[in-house]
Image 1 (cartoon, one colour):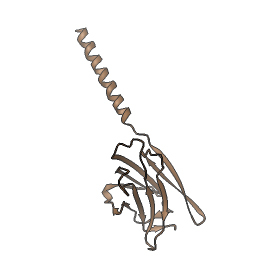
Image 2: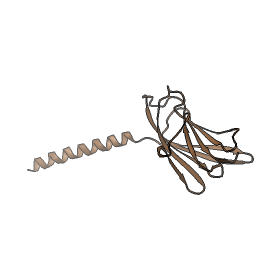
Image 3: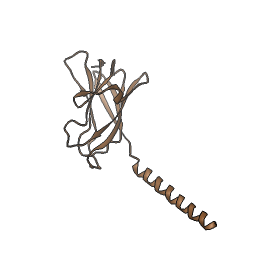
Image 4: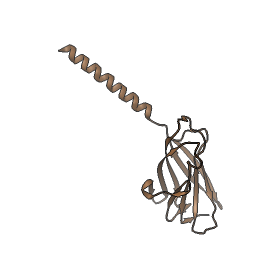
Length: 155
């Protein structure tokens, strides 16, 4: 009887150790990137929190438009990732001050408007945070290209 209990406990401990090991191996490092964007005489801080792990940081830039009601910030993931295993799930949260970009906020991925159910948009009064997960493969042109649009902007 004691021997059966010891065998069951040993199997249980091995199973738990394997489960914890697999879980820890699947945890992805999160990186925080900070971008100072200047408009006129003021500098705004935009942040991107992501599991992106390529040699190149994602880029964030203000885009100019001839349309007065189109203000957008470009977010671009470009290059090979460290894993370079083909398609990878990339998650990001971009946080933008509301006095830099405001109004109706929407998202363009590559060239197409993303359904609002495809991302999470949160406004805490001072910042808009947009969170999305997408599949990335560096061979596909534009797959890591996003525009965050607002109907109003500081530029």
